[in-house]
Amino acid sequence: MAAGDKTGDRLIERIRRNWPGQASTSTELVIRLFRLHDLIWSRSKDEARRCGLTWGEFEALAALRSAGPPFQMTPTDINGLMIVTSGGLTKILHNLQAKELVRRVGNEADARSCFIELTEAGADLVARLGRTMTEASDRLIASALSQPETRRLLRLLEGLTRAAEAPDRDHRR
Image 1: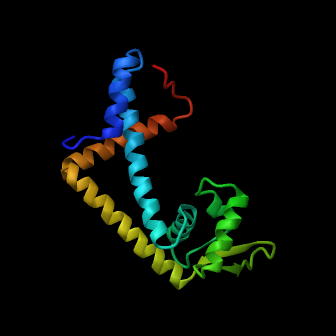
Image 2: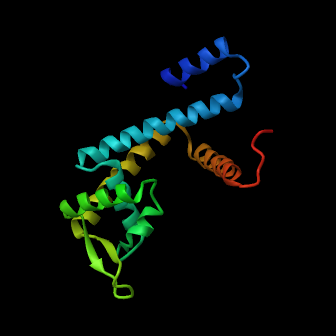
């Protein structure tokens, strides 16, 4: 890293110096992954905030947009794509409805439930915000990695993610 990751570098150096038994390649990798996650997530949350949204509100809009036309989902389906309690989702959906970014639509198949649907304003906002976040990620990645390096890293991270998700895998080797 040319400029260095001051926070990650400092932590890794402290571990090497003061906790050598914990210093390993995997420890450094995890620290760098966490640091990268924190930096990207913080910038994304700031961008959502500039558009008047909390991160949870952006996630709910993105979940609805990912559903495809007519951009409708039940609250239970939205909840399955987010890490939030049902009470938290209720508050998020209420806020989005008050901002006229979503609306409740009756469910003809089940009168006891409803669909949450993106409004035109909600679809426009999440599209604009999604483009902004993607462009920022594209710039970040292109500033550090070539296309072949990016594709290789993607394949490596896919493999690592699959290994972490495997239920019967012994990760303590």
